[in-house]
Length: 78
Length: 376
Image (cartoon, rainbow over all chains, first blue to last red; front, side, top):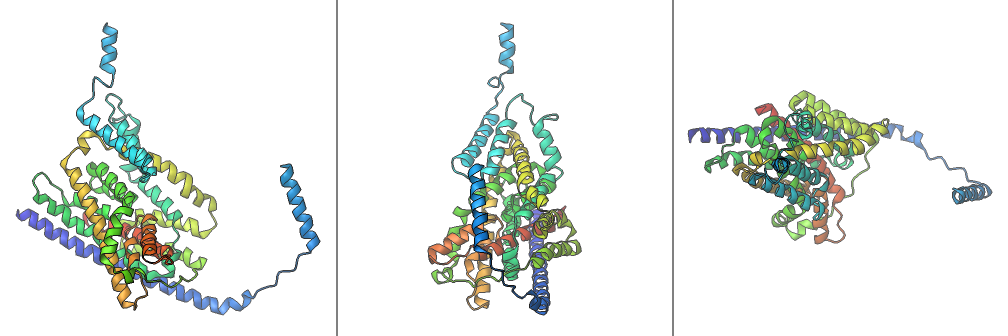
């Protein structure tokens, strides 16, 4: 009986230790993720102007028609 | 006449023991659940078939030299199969939702309480005559509460190989039963108003963050919990292959062919442990009971933690997503989504639940590492 009580006390110890460590580990991970997010967003702010949108050159409508008809013919023959 | 007698002596009918027949029936039941009811068919089908094969008299599948013997010996005793599966799961996992809202890691941590509470439960069960679980047995049983098949098999193969069959069957059965076990607990612990809470849309996560994440997890494991590196390391490898974008071929193989091949052999090898001598015992009933308790407690503590976060954040967190903190990816997240939709038809919680869901995978791997470090 005493050994069972001892085992239960051990199990309780493992529970407290285990939950503590799980929270500690994942807690540190939270800090890490937030740190990375903050660093990257700061780096992005500095570099975003270079990512300005470039207008797509308008496609010639005759070229589009030619390509789509070629695709159709290829699909029909395949 | 002698020839006929010799033939008769070699038939299955002449050698069946009642235990073998019963275990074949258990195998048949698993096949039924997989095929007709659609419960985790990818695993229960090979496990069920393995159970049938393992109980054929005079077939020698599970004796030294038999195929199932080697499948178990090579893949499970060494821990290789569950680890390969974990790599595949890593390659299948998108941490985007978690990185966008890292606080959900706390939900994945809270839900691991199911594991540690069950550890005490398993020891307390020794009060009942006929049960004699050692601390290692108890830890292997408790990990069922992590709701993660490969983790459960890995830990059981290290701590309590003789209980592996029952633990694996319990783990996968309960994962299949997530849609039945979780919703009542979730409804019990939350109010209608809480279930209706809508959550803010998650921010976009950059590729860099996704690449750094597995490396960071690995780094932390190396520093604080080397015992968890087999599980976490393989998981991070799979995830890095996915997110780095430079090894698409490897990533696809890990997600599809490799995980499928390993699943077949893992299922068969686990099924081979379902022999009458090892399964038809009082302990099995205890394991099935404790597994359900572990699952329930994990769900409850996840929801309670989410309630706390809801209070602290001023009602921005829907407490339902805490239930996804037990891993069981993606089933638990889908269940959260379903219960959320019942409360509010326009409330889609799936993406928000994926955060705690993948956090649960990490949490149970960490919990397994802790149990290994303390008891292994």
